[in-house]
Length: 115
Image (tube, rainbow, N blue to C red; front, side):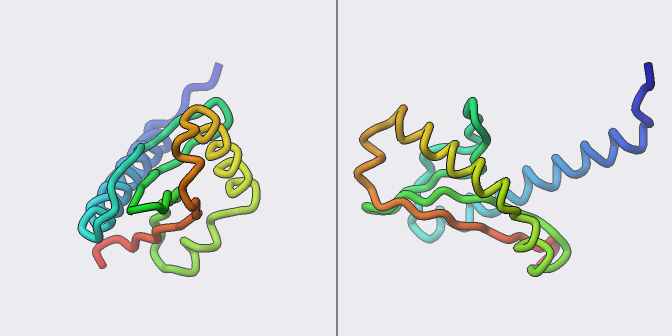
C-alpha cells in the first residue's frame, strides 16, 4: 500500500480551503445583490452544486471557480462538469418541485485571489 505524501495532502487541503473561501466570498457578494441562498455545497447522488440562489422568480445554479486569472477559471468548467451540474439540478428539481416553476439559469462565479 502506498501512502500519500504529506505535500500532496497539504496541497489538497489548501485547495479545498481556497475553494471554501471562494464560495463564501461568492455567497456574500450575491447576498449583497439581493440573492438569497437556497443551498450551498449541495451533494446529490449525481453530482454537486456549489451554490443555489434565488432572487424573485429566478433560481441560479452557480459553479464557483478560483484561479489566478479569469481565462483559466472559465476554461476550467469542462463539458463533463457542466453535464454533472445539469443532472444535479434535475435531481434537485425532482426533490423540490416548487423550484421548477422558477426561471432557472446556470451561472459561474470566477474568483481571483486577492483581487
